[in-house]
Image 1 (cartoon, rainbow, N blue to C red):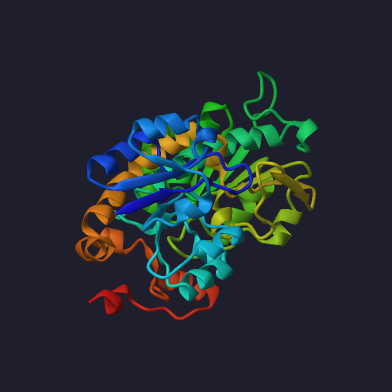
Image 2: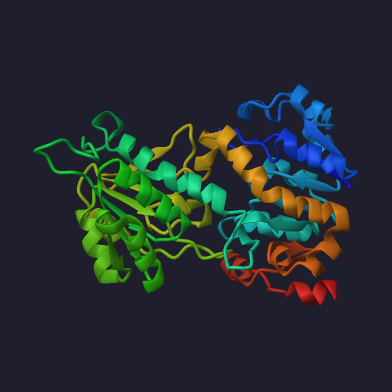
Length: 370
């Protein structure tokens, strides 16, 4: 199979879909890999490093997109829709519930879209989403602390405080991978941390791990209201795989927050779990709504691209090899977990949550490949 790795064009997106070691694994398996010129530059991977691993460097995005399978990091932007064609295998983060037009373009052009974020594993996890969730979660208190500085629009509060002053209060909505990583860093910064979740088992796990350094509360409207209104930093960390994130914090609640407090909504690439959130970029990461600083960058791990690209390839390579070695149809027939990653197939939308969110018909993958 011919695999293409184009340069990412999203604002300040420095990651690349595959690092040289991944290229070597595919080439050693008998496949051809073409990498767009300077695709790895932002992550510190030179064209020479890719060539040394067996890739062929191509001058244009069109040449990389002309491969049988395209391996990316972020969802295609409108400037890339012209590369879509029937039978193209697109292997990347898609987050289609938040991008109706992209969904419809993939369907109209009969692209076989396989989304990292809906591939599962034997324990019900999302192994290809996990590494980026961990990075975004660990970054959330870091960027939240920066946003709380007065020069950056915040209320001028140091999260960890100093002796004789109050420590910052951090409310994390969602105790999954993102929420756990966020709690870990916020505790390390010295903040008072509360995590809200609906799973008793998850809350028990968090208390076992963090002990008395963490408060857990059941996530219901009353507890969310109480903890959002008293927080200095609110981190949205809610995920419904493949579907739009539920809006758990209303605009009215944001209006009641303290002036200069901060919201970091890590769920923004799925539409966000806070009503006042809209996607921002690393170039202009924050805005102020109702006196509250909002940090809603949809590709937070892109700011640490070298770490992110290594972590991403570690997770995605095994499935890329399955698709390339077996062909996409046999690969999805032979792996339920990979099949769950298929979001669009030959003109159909095959994830019910996506279909519902963007207003298209849902078709089971089984009916299309059997």
